[in-house]
Every structure is written in C-alpha cells, then in structure tokens.
Length: 154
Image (tube, rainbow, N blue to C red):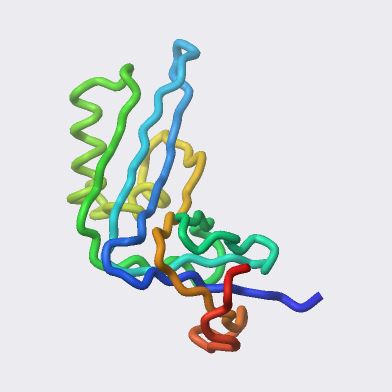
C-alpha cells in the first residue's frame, strides 16, 4: 500500500495550537499533571491517511505532532499552563521557567519536555488547527514536495 501524507495548513494567522498533556505518579500513589497550550502565528499538522481527514471544514481539527515532517510551529505568541491542585507554587514556577527560559542545559519549550531532565511523562501531544484551513497531499519521502493542492473536504 502506498504511503500517504496530508498537510493541514491554517489560512489565517494565530489559528494553530500545540497542546501537550503531561503527568507523573507521585511517591504517595497520587498523580500530578499539567497541560500546556501554545498558540503560534504559523505552522501545520499532518494526517497519514485520507481516512482521517476532517469531514466538516467549519470545525477545528486535531493532528498528532509526530506525523509527517513535524508541525514546524513558528512564532509562539501565547502559552497557557494548567496545573493539578497538588503541584506546589515553587514547582509551578520552576516548570514555567523551564518552558519559557530554559533549564541548566538551556533547553526550553518542547525541547525541555522531550529532552530535559524531569520525571514527567507526555500523555498526549497534538496540534489543533482552527478553520479555515487548507489540506494538501504531499510526498511523505521528499520534504516540501506537493502532490495535490487544496483537497476538498467531503
């Protein structure tokens, strides 16, 4: 079966978000969590099958951040973080600082989440794209190669 790849691109600025949910199991058996939602000026998401494409062009769509060439998010304009109630104020501040400014290894943002030294587990990482958006079929092997432009949503 031929590999497929579909790129979903917002047609307006500030219509793409990266949402990351993380958790950890604490020593007392409880769970702590936090959710990051970042808004970007530009970027895109991918589907690896036509069967997953959205069916209603007037609703937002979710894509997985690890599919395709990656979302290539550009120019973060907002970042909000929600924490579970059992995370201390000091730890919240440390997480916020690591996300925004970097840790001792100078990793920040998603780099800190994926490569930094911490005990958080990424539960979900998705790209949310608000309408209007365009869907293009692209070559899964050759970066940037367009195969079919502006696929109609049915």
